Structure formats: structure tokens, C-alpha cells
Image 1: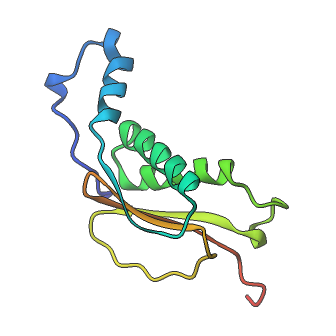
Image 2: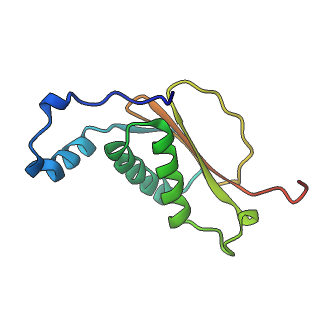
Length: 128
């Protein structure tokens, strides 16, 4: 079973006419704190916005990680469009340990409403 984050009470959801307003309100209630990063400030701000939108749209951790990875890969593709030049990986959850090798200046660990998000860029090893 996939882990999910708690959702607001559906009985308290606004009518369908206000879905856009509800999504905007949900985004405002999302708190993001950077725990550790070696990304530039601009990349961190863009990552926070991507994470904010992902958390407003998805509840399943797997879906959150997939969304964040896909948007970040599209925004920052490899220069030559080859995986050997580096692609992003995203990990989302509330209880995990991770040890990864990543490119310098392309990793960030943040928390979004007490859910951890780790994103990093890694090249495929030419020795595999």
C-alpha cells in the first residue's frame, strides 16, 4: 500500500464553482522549510513552488515524487538530453533514511508540512 498524507475533510470542501479558489487556498496553507541545500537560491525558490503545487494536487507520496521529478527534469534537462549527463531523482516520505551520491549544487532536502522531500541530480556511472 502507498502512503498518503492526510487530506482536509471532504465535507468541508467548497462547491465545484470554487475549485480554483480552493486549490489556491490549499497552496497558501502549505509550509515549506529547506533543511539542507547546495542549490542556488533561484533553484530553491523554483523547487519550493513546484513542491507547493505538487502537494496541492497530489496526496500519494509516490505521485508527489513522480510529479516533482518530472517537472524538475523538464525545467532543467540534461544539456545533451542523455541520462549520462544527469537526471533528477525525488524521494518523498515521512520516515526514511537515504544515502546518495549526487552532483554538486544539485541537491536539496526540504520539508513540506512535515513530509520530507529530497531531490538530487545524479549521472549514470560510465563504469556500470
